Image (cartoon, rainbow, N blue to C red; front, side, top):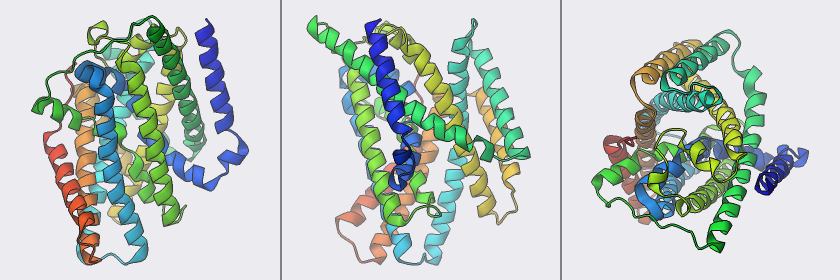
Length: 398
């Protein structure tokens, strides 16, 4: 009971701070909150169980490695933001940029299916019959709802909901971390911490990690905020968002890795709910609220992003409404034919391909600017890494 009270107080306090008018109106924070919300939109819901099951006591190291990969790709994208502001794009670069944008539009389509399948899985946990079929039905209903809203009215009516959900999600995550800290402290006092062995470090385990890239994706949104913020603000706010999200993720995984045995819980998209029941009775309900809010707002953002990109890339030939229809059709197909971990893998591979292309663009910029030292080789290496992840990423086996 005391733990529940402390968690609620921490959540309310952080929520109140995030809704302070001075912070809400701060330009740098507003530029930070967009990539930050995307990065930690859903990863915290699934990464804990997956990494604990596969890496045991080494899960925090695996999480740090994922964050490092994301940060390195972020370096390439930040360099592109800087160079686009400093010099015109050549013909060859323009073609690579166009391909990159098409890949991102497709990645958004798959990510919406990922977000809403998580929404469905967590949503049915509120019912008496939380089975897979009901989750798919709920996901399908939300996909059709999004299509209708986007087709008839656009998403402006839902923008305020997105802003509220970001602060709510961050506040609940801090509450979760506080609850886990208290639970870990209790285990330390009673000398009950656990160090579970990792699965053998092998190529399948590495390719499984490749299939989780989507969980640290989202920082690239700063690349497309040029109408709202100057290049320096976008560069610094993206970097800050990656610092914050990396700290949250690594602390979160570190707090989970040594209090659970892999055999103590089944691996599913909602396994975190079953794990948190033993930490504090209030956490499952809070996580469901965070999940529903986060997944819906993320899906709205990526639906709008995909529609806008397709319309822009085709010179308006594909109107956003038709792009939404394509997205929903693909989303319905994935929902009924691929499990959530398969969708996560597809989304990760699509974003990895996009990051690889962005690294190619960064390498070309570096070569053209006569910066042919370590920076050029870094970008070439990142391009190769992105393409390797896109080819070999595999889904988690539940």
